[in-house]
Image 1: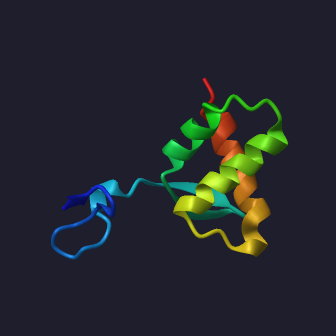
Image 2: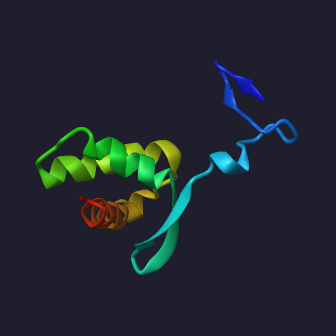
Length: 91
């Protein structure tokens, strides 16, 4: 079911459609951790054309927080993982 105001939800359970979840696994403190919308996050931040690593890291964390719960105590580790992904996928 698609509702422009509400979004696109499963017609059976009312939750997020399974095909709308885009989770990739990254290592956070050595543990495999799923990050929803990782490709979207990296591409979106890349399109901002930021040159400073600190600004890139802050923006990656900001975007990732929109789709994922990031524990306060693990924020730095998530930032490290997101930066690795960002730099690893640069063309």
